[in-house]
Picture 1 (cartoon, one colour):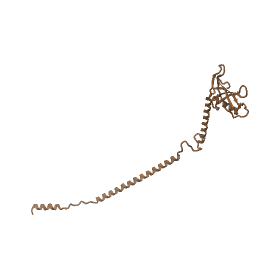
Picture 2: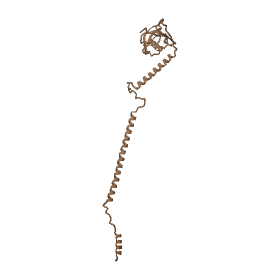
Picture 3: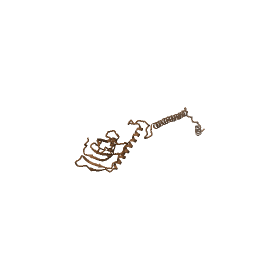
Picture 4: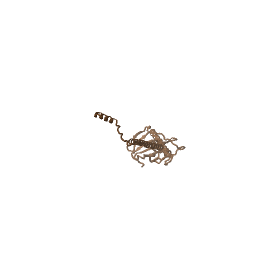
Length: 236
């Protein structure tokens, strides 16, 4: 056999040699177990996250419901107080409403009286130079009305109906409150017992002194005939 044939035969034998397989040593099994473990871990994390989120949602809903409950429970109707509830002034709301209505009525009555008086045309002139009269006022003042019945008695007793009606006529003429009238002297007028002369001042302006000449009108009450504004108070 020639060398060429021997070489050819050796080459053919090499071509048919089956390569040896490398041992696996269980690597594929380990990778499978790791992948399975990873999938289980991710699933557990998702479940845990969902559980925490659900708890947070429930807590939030409870907090919102509690807040709404207290807001609705503690909120009163605007401008309204339970009847009988005491305010900072120590008065109940119903008492305050009654007092406010009474105050509004008094204010309305006071404004009406002031308007009636302001509609009266008052003529003023200077008093005699050598007298204590600064100015003389005249106007068409009307009787103030009376609750007295029967024979009229000119009374100078403080607290009597006749005295109170004198004060009311004076206050109306001077357009001040009856409680603001400071009486210095009230005496019987010249002539019959149906006249009176009053020397007064407003309590908040005692330096201003007035002398009013009043007369009684049967069934209609006292009315002012003339007013003198004095330079000095000669009855103080």
